[in-house]
Length: 131
Image (cartoon, rainbow, N blue to C red):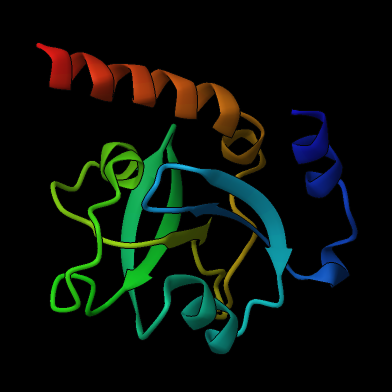
């Protein structure tokens, strides 16, 4: 959590604060340059936005637009967070666009709580599989 807080507090000139959720349910909080190419590199192809709300804050998850076609693995952690039944491959979560349409930082509370959120959702997913 200390590393996450350090990343949150870094200079915003270093890029957009985002949360990367891999299909294997690993999570990384980092800053990226916010370009289309950066998002495409993270998801491994063309991006498609999936908008959602977390604790009243609008956010966007960018996923591989052709994830199902390329048979990428389902991302269960992302599906649980976003509330969507099938999202495939790695994803990058950012804040909702500002009034000029520019991407914003992911909600800092969301980023700061990713470890706790990840653990709770993993436990819930395991519980569903076991039951």
